[in-house]
Image (cartoon, rainbow, N blue to C red; front, side, top):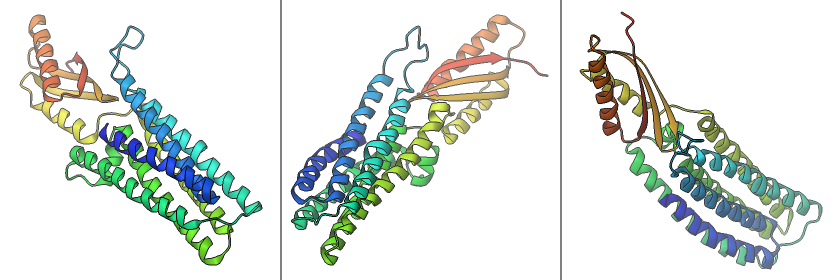
Length: 295
């Protein structure tokens, strides 16, 4: 959650300063960036709402809890990036191409964008620090491929897009100054919009898999299977299915147990393995165990 707080703090200040600079200079690239930052603020508030909802206790209508609420709101963030950020920026750029206006006081825009780069870099640093605590020595690309924490994927994507967008807007204003051609500013707005749509599609694709239903992260899934096979109560593991529910895991196990003669002994072994699995893997909240004998 700290990564989201970092991003929200940075984007709130950046959005206000960009909006003021856009009104003062008339830069469409700056306006696109102000909308981008405002959309990011709204997105981070939605992520915080999703995290809060995901912690609600299960109800009769939702017996497995609300863990997947974070996935829903993360997907909504992707839609907002696409519509509020990307589509609006492209529209504004196309509008300015048809009715070009010179950028007034461009140094104001450049200073604001420079401050924005510093704040976004601070936000990205906080996000990477939190990811490193979770990923250890795992490469970042692999973490994003395997991670089931949608909120960190979203925040990282937003921060990278924000830095790239700032660079594009800065380049567009500098080119507009150097050439005296305001069309560069409009093209900067369009470039920011295309970038946001690409990021939105990438985030949406990643979160889509979680909404449909994914297993535990590969390393954790392998660790659970290895642990089950090593248990003295388990003679043979036939199958194990895991299902990510936000920060919690649902696990179903089908195995042949060592004790097969006594019903009570069988039940005791099932209960022992279930309880021990939850202790060994704290993310596991629900365990369904099906004893079987295929011999």
